[in-house]
Image (tube, rainbow over the protein chains, first blue to last red):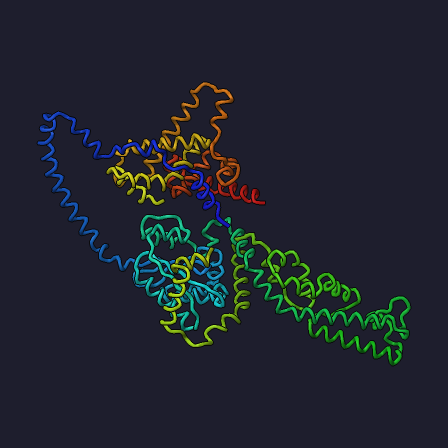
Length: 456
Length: 173
């Protein structure tokens, strides 16, 4: 969804007319035209002022030369050391972060500039790993962690874009390192590199415009690491919403539910079996109970009674089934009410419905059945507390960071098999990469068009 | 739009470069229009005023000193013109309904951010938001422009943004 600022600018763009013909045809009363008007002065007065002007011009000339020499002395060392001024880089996958790099090519600051990058940079250890490291290595850490968290889907077409402002060496080195990182893993990922002006850099990174590279570096260093913390602190709940409402939580939860589906099915069968055994006990002719005939009541009140062989066997079967249930799911069913409560969970949300839900899983669907899902998962001993916490919109920035950290851990777990499946093949050659890029350019017209196509 | 870009375009315009002036219009018109709108509160008037402001820029460009704060120079022209227009409005005799109908905005602002801003923000809040978002002024600079303490600008901006976001969210529902 577009931000209100973007919407506002777009609205103005649409509604404002072109320059009117009246304004367009109006001649510019430029300084030159103004000078020409001055020529209307009389020749005599111009001659008088000419003498005075000559004197002034002489001194002004001397002053200008002196100023130029001083300025050159002051500015030359800076001009010659521009290559040491460092660089600023934007790395975009979908997570987008800005790196500030010093004159030695070391990272001095990393800042998330969208919600997905918060998930990566909420891991403080990862941020510390990048700080002080060479920019190419730090960006590789960022990209690798993004891949581990599932932000790079290598099973389909994907790309990484690195844009820079300042020292071009940082951009070149980083671009090459990322290309090689993917080639070593045996996957083809287009790596776009682009050198930008300060203005264009700010616009792409979503930062407030600044006039100079020095001001840009200053801005990056002033910003807190997490997007939610600097974009405006009141908006972290909204930013959290961006994470949870997109593929985010639903995507990870789907896997979580799928992984536990067999357990849920087995749990439903086990509960059904307990109900059957208890029904058999209740309806048995050998049951010694008068009014209350369930297994638990008999076990508690008729312990001194000698059961018939058949009935004793039925009670023993129930003993074993309950012990198995407790061993498997960690829950001891204490009485018939507890058994019916567990069974109700499955009748309210039977396995068939879970399967149907998984067929077209969305966050909205998940959220609408969250209570039911939680019940059946708890029935089979699965801890859902992390999910319950994640589905609550955080009230404070601390809660936000905590939730995003938990979310990152869940994503790591969810996408671990995908990540581990890469790099199992042979490394690819530079030639293979060049051929791949040629194909993309042929197909899309340019790498930029390819990037735009991926991010439409 | 960057301040340096505006300064450069004004300097080129001052040398008689009409293409630079046209570019100046493209990059500054949103800011000029919105700034004027905060005074005139009427689309048609703000649009007319905007064209006049650019006419004044063309006519007065010789007085722009290269390298000085070009956006402040433009905003000063816009502000003076807007205040003159308001003065004229106050002095004008009360018009009948037909005339006021003729003054209705050409562009319908029934929906959108602009309309919401108009509805929920005060003139001053709109001005602060315009200067910050469209002109890229820092709160400290806005304070200097509007003769208002920086802290007041910051709190007014924050409050304005909260109100605007809330209103936009409600509209989306």
